[in-house]
Amino acid sequence: MTIGIGLLGLGTVGAGVAQILATPRGRHPLVGELALRRVAVRDLQRARPIELPSDLLTTDAEAVVDDPAVEIVVEVMGGLEPARSLILRAIAVGKPVVTANKAVIARYGEEIAAAAAARGVYVLIEAAVGGGIPIIEPLKQSLGANRISRVSGIINGTTNYILSRMADEGAAYTEVLADAQRLGYAEADPAADVQGGDAADKIAILAALAYGGSITRSAIPTQGIDRLDARDVAYADQLGYGVKLLAVAEQVATTAEGVAELDVSVNPTLVPRDHPLAGVHGVNNAILVEGDPVGRVMFYGPGAGAGPTASAVVADILNIAGIRQVSALGTPEQPVPLDPLLAAGSWRPCRLVDSAQTRHRNYVRLRTSDQAGVIGRIGTCFGDAGVSLQSIVQFQAPTDSEGGEAEIVVITHEVQEACFRQAMAAIEALPVVASVAACLRTL
Image 1 (cartoon, helix red, strand yellow):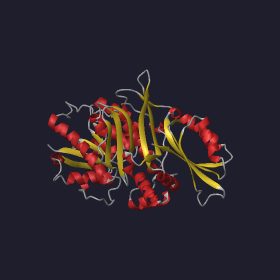
Image 2 (cartoon, helix red, strand yellow):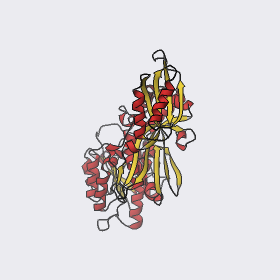
Image 3 (tube, one colour):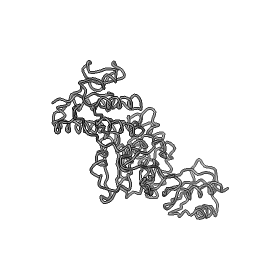
Image 4 (tube, helix red, strand yellow):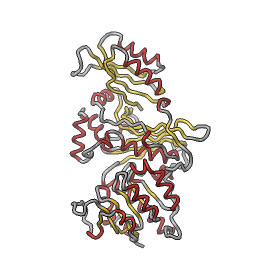
């Protein structure tokens, strides 16, 4: 039985999906049962990486959703609107949806889940996080018996490519970013990647899956790599660390009312060389899940691009197609039961803990006067605030600094954020401290 597919978007990922559907030989037998019925594009005249019959193409995305020949709607157009409205329109008419749109799911997952539950249709999102890495289904199913304590990862390939080049070559951020744009790893406007927004979208989704309730995407503390200095990457290397943009979701407490309190953030982070995430280079992604009783499991692979993301999209299509064929479900009389998106508080409420109460290790680089007693005064500020230090090292001042300056790098032990902020305020007030040049997390 042929299953009709409606494709919303024919960009990099959409073309990859169309290419897989057009070449079923050697793939899972069900791929041969999938037929592309309608494709929504912005411009009918635009050159495309795959040739499709002109009668399949339309600029009317709603017509794709409404077409009776379309049984599964695949949204790969990106952006918030009209993608959100089209997903909800498909749900309303009883059609399952596959989407790669992390921005929509991170912000409107609760609304979409509620609509899907009411209508009894699937909404599958494997391609929204990690490209070709299977992480959504494992979190929903394979790891469902575990108490997940922490999910952390490198979930943006653009920034990981930039940081890898900065570490390997000592190159400046702006230079490597320009190369990444020329190679197609970074967009012409790279803000979503380099400022951390893309990673924040993805960790919001992973946190909802791991802990069973939605969190407010806009409340996630987010720091990107756009202000990162190559000097800090070099110092980290000398101290035995690599620098990665890490997205982290960790449960820190459960209230008496059963609310899961989470620490969720995105930050450039020093990662010890012997940590599993330290060896993830280039455009690859990796997601480390820690839980009881499974321990540590890591999912690694290409995190972006036409091939990996299209692979995940088609896997979701096959998931729905397989259920429809084997179980004979999905007709108007027997709707497909909801696949739990876990974005609508399906087991428990979650909330972000006050950031001042979170606990982290920190890396700090200070520009100071090069004189006796400076390190002692800095150490006293940390001690008075209850901040224990792992190391404090003086490096040679950069060539562009004022004469008589030094650079001091401090790595703290784990400390409550409020105490760390108190120490930093006291340090910034010291006459011998010219500036706080960098402040990063340490894993």
